[in-house]
Image 1 (cartoon, rainbow, N blue to C red):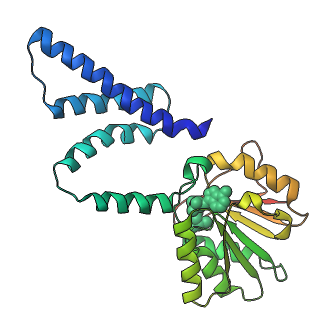
Image 2 (image 1 turned 90 degrees about the horizontal axis):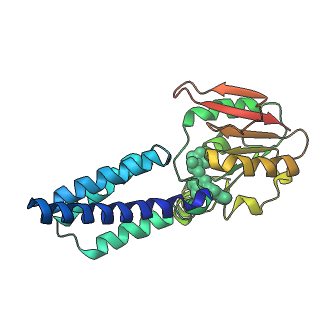
Image 3 (image 1 turned 180 degrees about the horizontal axis):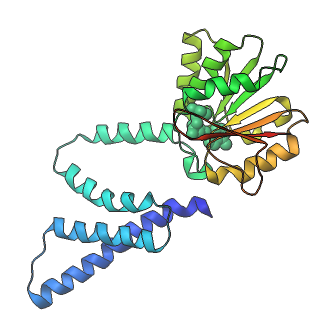
Length: 250
Ligand SMILES: C[S@@+](CC[C@H](N)C(=O)[O-])C[C@H]1O[C@@H](n2cnc3c(N)ncnc32)[C@H](O)[C@@H]1O
């Protein structure tokens, strides 16, 4: 039911607005105090943020709940043509396409991962490597430049990152093959190394797929996020950011 969190967040905004509106209308009629729209929105923002905190939403929802009404208020002061809002909406939809369902937004990994991953593949003959949720494809393109005998694949569910990775690969004449789709539809036994940079919410389900499909001798890598209750076989600290690359030998 984690995917319902966005609906709950919207409900919190609407209900806190309604609550504060009723409360301030009551105060204004009984105590003869007048409130401006900004007063109303500040109280509403505080109420929504407090509710998100008390209802134990993930921490980032608290500032989002607080800032959203104020941001909307300040934007309304400018006359921005509707097509700008529409273009922004379209861009974010293409970028974060299935985030609501997958609970995995787009954010890039670091190029500091390159050397540790290449070192891990050192003893492997012509390995087949896939980045599941390949984003803009930067990591794969750099890996493919350094390891000519290996085959590199990416699969991405969000249209905009996939399109950009595909065009980027063609422009740079990279050997990486970028597929548009859901990695849950792949057969993981086709790969020797599977790399992911997803989110805590995605780890239990990808691990179930790894356990049932990956072949003995293959490696599953996850940057930053662990698999709950399954100790990794190794963890490498990525020097530039202090995060870890976790690995499981199957
Ligand atoms: C945090 S980004 C990582 C991008 C890239 N791997 C990197 O290291 O820079 C995670 C990406 O996974 C994609 N994603 C999430 N669930 C997916 C799924 N089931 N199938 C394919 N892609 C998925 C998201 O759209 C997002 O672009």
